Length: 247
Image (cartoon, rainbow, N blue to C red; front, side, top):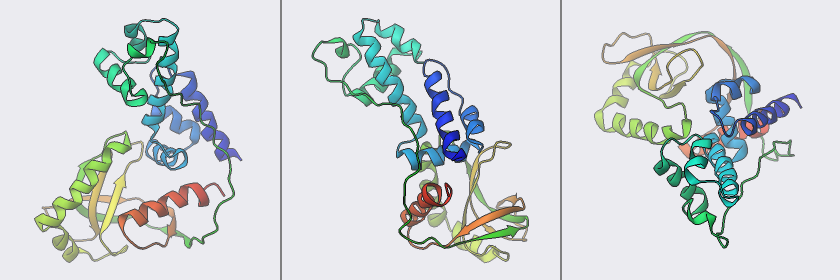
């Protein structure tokens, strides 16, 4: 189907540019989604972050180049590493040995082939959802900037929630909640036109100088029902991307 074909076209573009700079924005355009959502979809479907996949592919090719006699410094520069130390760290992270050790005839190396997405039969467990037209709504809360390599945010976001819990921010926000959607919200504002941020917030019409405000624009929403811990919510997100969205 077209969606899968677009993802594979993005993979082809990665392959064509492994020895050059790879623009995430270009990959997202090929897949017809935002940079943020392309990275989320890729990680769920491939079970590896986008940056990790690119690093594995580059280090697989780098190993071949080193075994063919190319100099370590030349291979490092070829795959975008200005610092031999950074290249050494990346190479060891993938292969478990240094680039110079990879030149040995008995060196044990790893190869990560190009991936290819395809449809699979899944969905034995039901998913409850509805399609809803929602008008714009205002949220207030605390925010922090997000990295454009989204796996780096797995440290930022939990630290935010911990700080909000110990500082009294959460009960203060709860007291200001007066609009739909009710509840404490975790909001990622990660479109292509503004700074990426993560909010801990509530929907509110109240004015409070202690908090930052943001207006979520009107849109058509797919609303899914789920419950449980943060791990359960992440599993629901994964099922949305890998089971519901392709169909």
